[in-house]
Image 1 (cartoon, protein in one colour):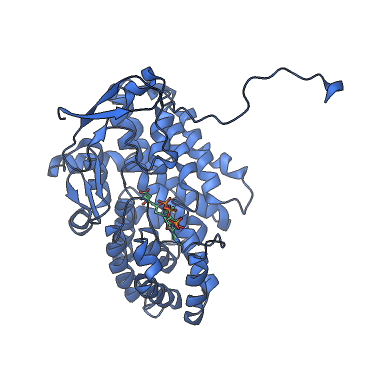
Image 2 (tube, protein in one colour; image 1 turned 120 degrees about the vertical axis):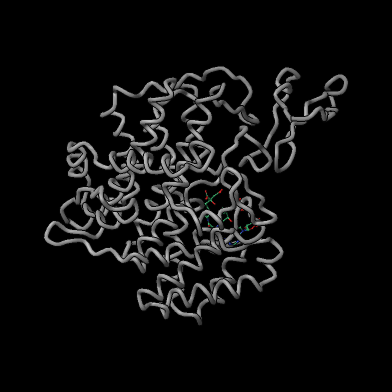
Length: 429
Ligand code: SDX
């Protein structure tokens, strides 16, 4: 922290308002404006562009540099040297595990992969064409109905077992969404497999034959989960924190995060990128779409481009592009037409003054969908994959908030509605 101060003078308010300025270990200082209410003032910041909603030690982003750190470790190093479950441990506990801690954590997670058999009945209630994100919102929230013995959010052990259950069961539920849509039998987890290998087994395996999982694809899947694990106070993580601030149970909070992630401006962008590339259809039409993206009167935006924080490359998109080339090469799909369109689109956009001036670069969603499509994951499952990976970050932020003193989140507003007026009887309207 620091002893810096901010001075504010406001017309109509007597005297100077002095506010503390707090410094973190990295990133901008923050002005503590909590005293303004006592002066009859609120701050006004729609979209929270300039608002630090909390203190956190989990993830740091420098948007200008295109830097992303998880507990101080650069995402590029974690993607190259770590794996998803080790990153889950890091996000939750603050340190990389030693060999014994890692084995115990992986064994714990892999021993919680099954869901209660009654969950099968939940899926029977969904139409065959239900969007997987609609199903995930429902079944993840419903998990709370099976764990009445461990929902005391003030008990660290209950918080830990809930975190383990959520990280362990998200892939199982995600695969159930896919199998439901295909009309195929649900696959039970195989706890002898790795986390991401097991997910692919539950997605693409069937009871009639032994699963054959390509190790290149399993590694790519694991890195995709890792790259999506956490990203500071994004919309869905902020939703989880806000839901958690009321004391709601962790399953309800994660379900609220899934709902917020679904939007095309956020986690739904990977699905929207694929739909956009398919709509473009041919490299000859790229200029037409870039023109539309720049037209203020056209609501179309280049999906997978731009970011609230990154005004440089999203470091995750660079790693994702590398995996893209590797997976498509392994699948013999290096000439995938959508990949060709994506690469040409990226080149054109990065050289276009509109995108340069507004500092719009490819984000994490730009290439992820092409990889997932090559793996055989349908477009409507892309955001479910994002949610599965992001569960680690959501639950780490939830736990960080609940483990420290917190208040219920309750923003105020700038009211511009009617001043007080009297009721008008029906006969006089
Ligand atoms: C994720 O927050 C996170 O960390 C999110 C995330 C995570 O890991 O949790 O990183 C995941 O959500 C990535 C973003 C995925 N969304 C998309 O790819 C959808 C397309 N992108 C845009 O919708 C947009 O860039 C946002 C929503 C991502 C960011 O929007 P902002 O911060 O509100 O920025 P803005 O809309 O104010 O844009 C600034 C300007 C605007 O023009 P002006 O009004 O200043 O003239 O840039 C323009 C925008 O119109 N712009 C775009 C654009 N993105 C911004 N123009 C065309 N195409 C785009 N993609």
